[in-house]
Each structure stands twice: as C-alpha cells, then as structure tokens.
Image (cartoon, rainbow, N blue to C red; front, side, top):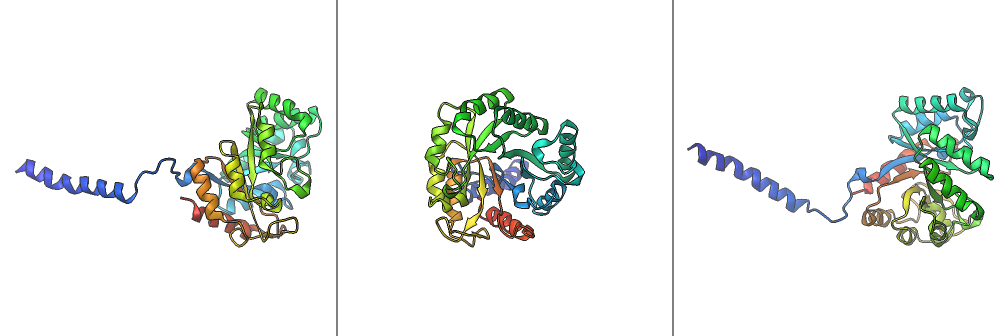
Length: 282
C-alpha cells in the first residue's frame, strides 16, 4: 500500500517536470535576463555633480553605471573633474557608489592625449576598481594603450562616435582593424552613433561578434547626420532585432542607457529606456 501511494504521488511531479521542459525548451546559446546587465552612462546626467548623478541612476533602477573622466564632480570634490581625483577622493567615489548600491565597471576616457595622460587614466581606473575603459585612442597610441591595459589588467572597449564627429572608429571595420594584434582591445557598440553614421545597428553588431564588451543605448529619428535623439523605442532602431542579435551572440556585457536629449531633466527618459529595453530582453 505504501509503495503504491509513492507512485501515485511521484507521478504528477515527474509529469509536471516533463511539462515544464516542453513549455520552456532549452535553446542553445539562450540568454537569461541576467546575462547582460542594464546600466546608465553617467554622461546622461552630465549637467549634475557626481553624487546627484548617482541618485538619478539609482532612481532609474539599475545597478551598473559608467563614469566619464571629464565629469565635473561638484563641490564635494573641490570642483575637480574625475580625471584629476586623488587617492582619497577615489575612496570617496567608491564609498558613494557602495552607499547607493551601484557598481562602476567602466569609465569613458575622452581627454587622454599623451603617454602620461594614459598612464594616469589607468591608475585612476585601478584605484576605482574599474574593469575596463571605454575610449578612442589615436592610432599612434594603440600599442601604448594595449600595453598599459595588459600592465594594469584593465581592458579597453573602443567606442564608436559618429562619422560626423570625426571618429576613426565610426565603422566596425575600423574597430576590427584596431583590435587586430591588440589582445586587450574590445568594442563598445553605440547604436545611435551607428545610425547617425548611416549604418544598420544589427549588421554592425554582427560584424563585432565576439568582441563586444558593452553597448551604448539610444534611439534616433532618422539615418544620417541630421538625425535627432528620440525616446528609446520611439525612433527608427529595431530594438527587437537588436535584442535577438545580442541573444544569438550570447552577449554578457553591459547595456548602458546614454540619453543625450533633455539634458536638464531627462530622468524619466532614462527610466523609460531602461524599462523598455528590459521588457524586450528574453
């Protein structure tokens, strides 16, 4: 009698497990939501001091933020920019991040022009426990930056500003050229800047398969130099196709919202971008 009862009870459990497997079949290379991480590029809040930008990022419901080296940090830091912070001020930055429950895995470096500048950038990144720099070094600095990246164990994601901005990295082929023979280089794909350069974002993602470290998330109203920023999901970028391509690549980096409109009051736009992209994620 006890043996029959065991079979009677266990059978529904087995069937339930089988049904679950049928309903949610395992897909090769399938992503869970946590496999890429939503974040905010703090450049979105560049009108505000560092502490205020963190409050806004927290209000947007993310865990990850990307700093930038020309951020005017505010009176708490003697009105210095991020690149000029000393060791004690770097400790304050880490404390503020911890208090807000935020992590700064990456930092955009846009001001380095000399070997000394680059070394300072990597030293600052190390003091902040940043894992990779997002940047656009000059060709003559490729070897230098790659060597410093290896020395400090901090990788480099080549960012892609638009063709109109004069970036040598506007096309994925240029990024691949820089990555070649530079083992510490990867890519930061900027969806909006690709559109402004007349490139299809999904095709650009495909070209950089295996090299993408992070994404900058924005939307535009048209292709070309005259394009204007729009709320994410209200422009011309096919974000469902973007998500499908990231899924295919098993992308596991950060997707940073970078809002470049309504700069004085864009928190709702940023919150919308986070919620919209997360709603599309598998």
